[in-house]
Image (cartoon, rainbow, N blue to C red; front, side, top):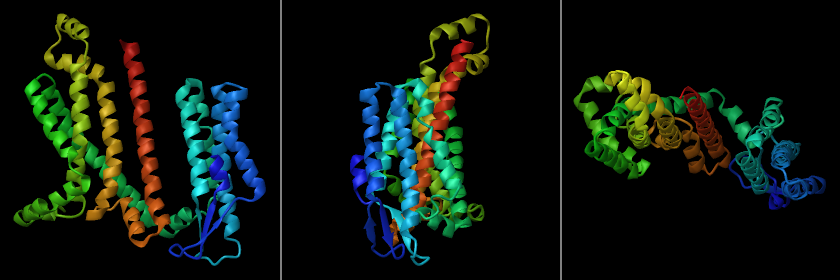
Length: 362
């Protein structure tokens, strides 16, 4: 964060492709940035409390985002409409350091967990009030307009359908394999082997067989199955998501304590009642952890699927890489990263709630 306050904060370019000029913070803002960078350290030394650390780190995040909006807006004054003001290395480094401090404070203390998110309403207010409208990524987002919304919806659709398909295949397989050691070894070995393949290689390997299948069976082609597009992407993503769902399902079902199972048998429960009322509820928190891992994994693989015409946020990432336009890359990469973090946080919260509820129920 100290280095970020001194490095260039904004890159001003005549358009999104041309090289530009790096701009540093004015001396007053640079001094304030240095003070904010030192604040989390001073808070831990002068008042050794995680509350002060979380509060000072959240303040640094809010101040960093505010400074980014101010400096990008100031840089574009008097510039043509197609000029772009991007965040430079100083802004990224400062915000990365503040984010690490916020995350660390939230992980170290339960009371500080909510305080560590205090920056979120302020940053959301900045965005809604248009304070960041001059930032090049939001400018590109406005230019893309409805197309960006369609790609985001396609990304969510790919992740949702692949996760649903993996659950439909993986959940029964995990139940079947949990009580059979050889079956478990076989299905986990196959799923593990599939995941060792690079995602691009797996997508490429699926093009030829799906093309041949669509040519042989016109009904499949009528349903939209072909060598490129959503069909191979969904197939590859489903195969990738199988391992965490299968592995956690087998481990969770095998880890159910024998006491409740024996007690349920003594009460005269049938095997079906034993599974639905005892084994599944006790295994669900660990199993859900595998679903969370699969969901986060799929957000990343869906970005790569844009290479075979499946659409999604990866479209902007690869378009930006081809034209050396960093703003387009961020237009796809930042929402994909936020989507993965949101899914991870949401499903992790569901795991905690489920664990507490089942603990009270037990």
